[in-house]
Length: 230
Image 1 (cartoon, rainbow, N blue to C red):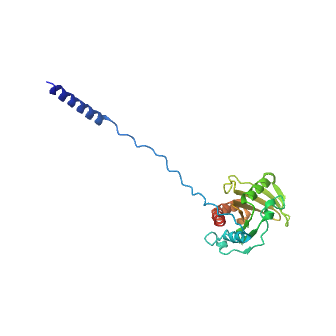
Image 2 (tube, helix red, strand yellow):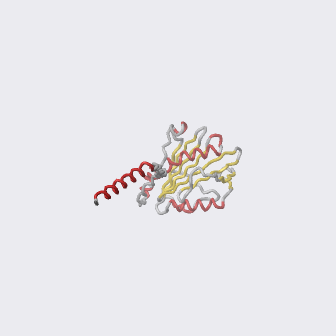
Image 3 (tube, one colour):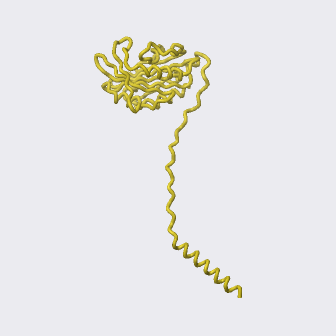
């Protein structure tokens, strides 16, 4: 007598489960957020130099090699020397810590439609970030000055957005140089370890857009070059 109700109960459960299974709508696919782009961190800093010879050697490794693929007029650089002028200082004679430089090098590409000048400066006992902080302090108050040596007037221009994102070790700004003719020049200053790399550029017809475009293009190459030294 007990087997019959149990058999009926088992049949009822089986039927109910089957009915529920056939009437349930399929689950919608779950939405997954797109993967976050990976940002490659900069390589670790090299040990600080301990001799002037080390500074001079590492300055050389940070010089840019721009070929015709970058721009036809950079197939060969125009000039290189180790008697480079001081780092850009705008309204003042020089950045205070730049007087303590140990080694420096300049390379220039001077073409018909582009002009590029690179400085790399190394310090034995001064951090590059200190130089960046000093220049950043100058830019807070310097908006216009007379360029030493040629009498042109420079008006500081801060494009928005900047051609390169600024940060503790990165400074970008442009200048409107007014004289017999007017042209725009843009500057990128990078600091890393005990070294500073500065690039000044001017583009076709002295236009601001051409200068900012050129600076944007050269910035990642300059960053990689400085990482080789520091």
